[in-house]
Length: 153
Image 1 (cartoon, rainbow, N blue to C red):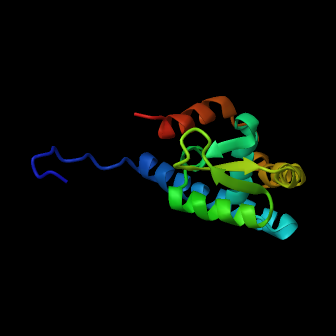
Image 2 (tube, one colour; image 1 turned 120 degrees about the vertical axis):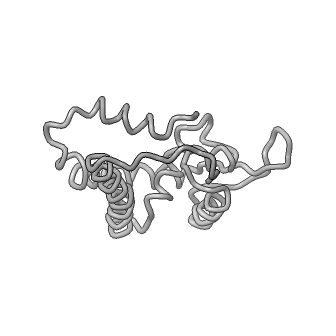
């Protein structure tokens, strides 16, 4: 931190409470979802969301760097998850067709099938762990608020 910078105002108690609650939720939701998916299907939330992003990508394929951005993972973590999914037969990894320098992940039919099997588990997990606990909360402004946190500067 620059010594010449103005002092940073402390958080209000309300802001500190929110920051702590957000941090707990950010850790709780993926861990819980992974526990539910792992118990039911033997997959992690990271694997699920990687398959979901590939499913949404044109032709079910994406460069590893683009997939890293979409999943908010590092490139090395995306490469590791891509390798796990490839070993399971859910994706194939091939050299990028446009320049041959990077790698692309291609969603296989087995990956689409696994995603289809996982979807009802995802819905059940999210209902139980999140939405049943948010009864009466207006989700639209909450969604906008959370999106604003990760919006590009």
